[in-house]
Length: 155
Image (cartoon, rainbow, N blue to C red; front, side):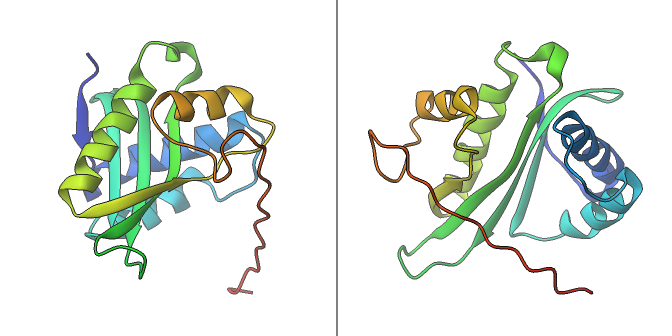
């Protein structure tokens, strides 16, 4: 059983590096690990942000990053699983399942009523993983395409 813990601001460098590793693996542009760590230091102070770490000091194996927000559709909050990452050489050992299971437990404990996860349509392995854990596509039995529009506002 993998050791899991709720990340604190003191874990910001670890979380920033894991997210950078995740982005590098999938050739996704993004800020350097130091910038991510700086931002996570502030995020990890918030009660509407949850980051779980798997592994142990000096041997972190993965993380889950979630945000929680109010919604008019439920009395509780809506959770968004922003990222779930396990280092490549330790996949298929239950670490992702442990992270997801603990994330669901904590979100429920914090009053969460629903969890959303965005998955690339072509990423069939990841889709199967979430379906195995009780998540469903918006339109069961169909491939449902939803587009995500982005506009950077900082520039």
